[in-house]
Image (cartoon, rainbow over all chains, first blue to last red; front, side, top):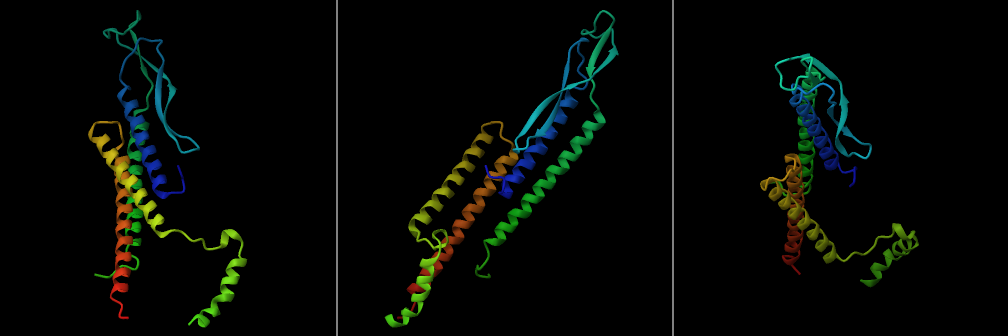
Length: 126
Length: 98
């Protein structure tokens, strides 16, 4: 795949921003799921490799312990663990990624109308 | 008439002295149009496949489908413009008073 083609560059941008939104949504979705203490959690993170491949990577997440004796997953001390997820940071990622996605769409539209205009070169003026 | 063409003889000789990659090469025009149409057809088919996949519920990002569609649209528009220019030139030739 050629990275010189502006359409390809745009597609990579759209793919990446979509992956960021997806990662943030997954993190938000698992933020309040309790587990028995001792289980490990992973955070999702979108990564862009040097050869412009977009992947969703899993990075280890911290643990937040809470005292909830009523929870069926609580251990003998009544503790459950939650993944340590910074909801504020995830929301910021969500907003910035969706704005960047829109910016990519704008850039594509600009390029697209340039190409359509170029097809009118030398055309009969109607 | 032929003598008049002799004036470009030196130009032809100059072209032949050029290194090989700088020489204008002759291309079969029919083959050129044929390969362009083939390319257009592949793009249209790939757009068609993407939209079918999306409709069938495959995990294709929507922007992927839209980009493929727009690419196919530009290719088609380009082909139509080329056809318009060719047809125009042909008509000008056929209407030429001899």
